[in-house]
Amino acid sequence: MDTSIRPEFRRKLNSGTTLFAPHCPDPLVARLCERLGYDAGYLGGAGLGHRLAVSEALLNVSDLASATSAVRLRSDLPLVVDGGVGFGDAIHVQRMVWELERAGASAIELEDQVAPKRASHHRDIEHLVSTAEMVGKVRFAVEARTDPDLVLIARTGAVQNEDFDSAITRLEAYLDAGADAVMLLPADEDQLAEAPRRLGAPLATLTSFDSQSQRRWQELGYALVIDPITGETAAFDALRRAYDRQRRGEPSGTSPATAMALFRELHELARFEELYEVERATTEPAG
Image 1 (cartoon, rainbow, N blue to C red):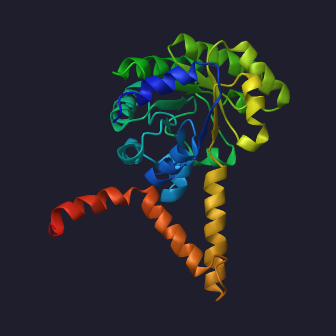
Image 2: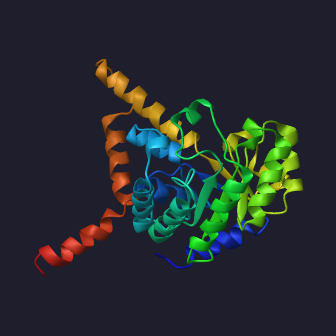
């Protein structure tokens, strides 16, 4: 792992600029995001839960660590990893931090819902732990890391489940416990503008990049904007359309020549040429 990835991500997070992190479930997408110039990628629990068809609630720490390690093996893109509720109480959170730090995460997101996490959070039925319990989780997450440049992001669902003022109070407590950044999901434009003014720390949110211009996010004062939706839904929609057409005996919508060109582009993006060079050096006769 490039040892500059974490400190550079932390520096940018605290620089006063807005970083953008799209859905990034695997190494190939990470390499694409890196090529396109994104600041980071987001390995979200919901996205991984969809890919495994088990929901985020049934993921385990090994699932997350394995996915994180796979990205880090083939990409230097900073990765924000959704640690969910930490898989239990404070000692489970500590183990999560050990595993994801070793796997190469640049940042870990920890939220204040109950553990074990419930599948119904996908349909907006959530239950929060007390502020005191979450403060304990944050404190021991901070103690668990060995690299001080690993960023810990404390997220609250209090806007949706209590109220905006409660969310701000919770996040202030999480910052006091040692969180490097905090995250909330404002319910309206007023809250969107007010949250950065009330929190003197890097602030993150989950949304579609399209909901505001990039310049607007900067003006509002957000340090990190994560889009966990667009990439996943766009990929699924394109795949569904193509497969549905083929199943009905119709052209997929992409010509065979274009499809083969894109297929070769995947080889290039995945850096297969490096592997070909090894084979040329070891299996082809010299001369």
